[in-house]
Structures are given as C-alpha cells and as structure tokens.
Image (tube, rainbow, N blue to C red; front, side, top):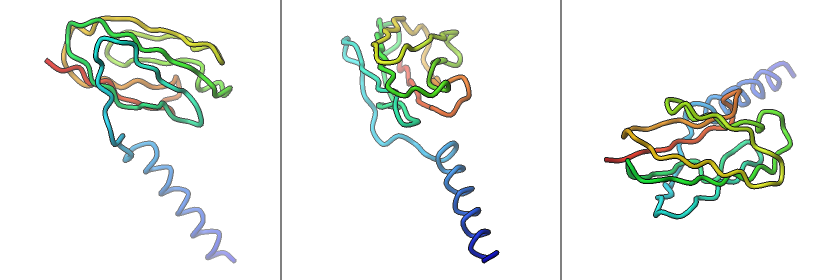
Length: 120
C-alpha cells in the first residue's frame, strides 16, 4: 500500500513539474491586425502563444469562463500591463508593443501561463 501511495505522489509531482515548467504551446497564433480571442478556462489560456510584429497595435480579447479567483487577473510581465478579467464578459486589452522579445502573461499566482512573442 505504501508503494502505491508513493508512486501516486511521484506521478502527481511529475505532472505538476510538466504543467508549470516544461509544457510548451504547440502552435502560435499570429496577429494580423484583428483582435485575438483568448479563452480563460480550466487552468489555461487558449491560445497560449501569440506572435505579433513590433510597433503594430494589438488587441487581445480575453473571455474568462473560469470562476477561480486565480483567473481574475492577467499580468503581462515586462510590459507593465495588468488587467482584471470579469467572468463571462469579454475584456479587450489594447496596446502597441514597442520592443521585440518574448513576454509571459500569467494570472497573479502564475498558474495560468502564456507567451507573447513580439518580432522585429
């Protein structure tokens, strides 16, 4: 019985490491001058990886379906952007990226994770 409990604990720990540190989004959504819809639900942002060119206006439209307090806020690290997301109502975040780079966007507890890649 102890072996089964220990094995279950190791599997859960491995899953947590994969989910928070090793998981990478498979496909990038490229901004083409139109708003990008991002769903906030079940612990993820969908899509979680967005590319856009530097110097072009960007509109991200977040729709939060997850009632978890963790999903209440989105923070763009390195861009000084932080917004509260209402449940069930779209929230548009508009800005023009001025510098190239890869910027994380997360909830306030950094459990929901995404990346914004700004290209030259």
